[in-house]
Length: 199
Image: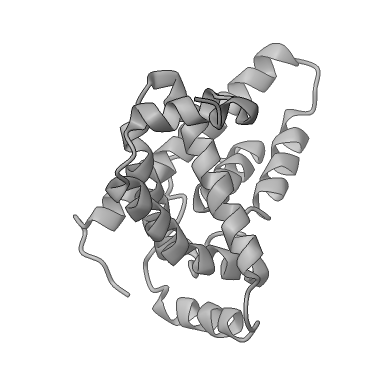
């Protein structure tokens, strides 16, 4: 599927790519500063391999960026390339669809993990109202990248990414339309379960 150059998805992908490249660059700098005698490339490549198994699109981009910096490659080229990928996407989609049904529990676990990751980050800035927006952005990233030939994900990981898209959007909608105030949600997070039923 082709997207216009100024589409929301393209802007979102560019921002996520820039975030991954920046994160990988600082990871390299941090390793070289704190552990000057360590094999930085091996550590970065090992982390890249670990993230390649994550069904989170942002982790897939980070895996690519870590691999690039771990191999001492220049960061001026594109991290992912959308040119002439339609046929490759179709082949990937065919393989993924051929895997059969996906476990709903795995999809739910992924959505909860993504939400928890954003909640922990936003809590530091007291920006709880942005949580639904973050989940919607992640759904868009999953949709744009699950069948992209440049990410290192295996077919089973891609299936989890695909199945998470509607669930992430549903959770974002739940958060957006909930009648519960953010203050009530925050109190619920920090109130021990033994006290929640007390008057």
